[in-house]
Length: 143
Image 1 (cartoon, rainbow, N blue to C red):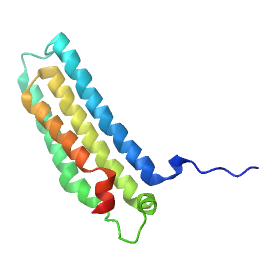
Image 2 (cartoon, rainbow, N blue to C red):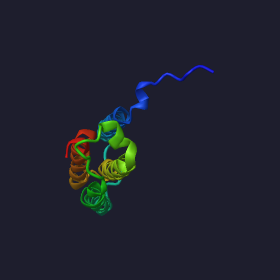
Image 3 (cartoon, rainbow, N blue to C red):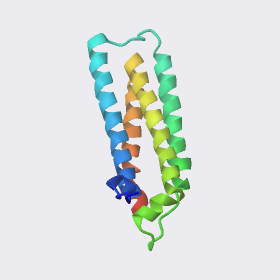
């Protein structure tokens, strides 16, 4: 049996960077598509803005939990540990948990804005995207 050649996906640091980029681009693409459709169709739930505010508030609380509770749980990288080793340890699971929670809260806020058109929902979604961009792989590798 022939030896298996290592590929670029064997590098966990590179895989984590690609995953973060894909998730971030997905958020931005969803925001663009939902805004385009909303402008074509109008607000779908016009008479109940409280639903949009409730959804925005729930999203804001979830983003706060991600930033204040989940982010500190990601272990710090020791100066003598290489990036692939850092990501092979328990760091990758913790970071993916953080990103999934941020992504879900951001998508929920985007849907709230799409359905109701309330401005706080899009502001919460923008905050989610900014925090997601802040907690990129390089942040965890260099802190």
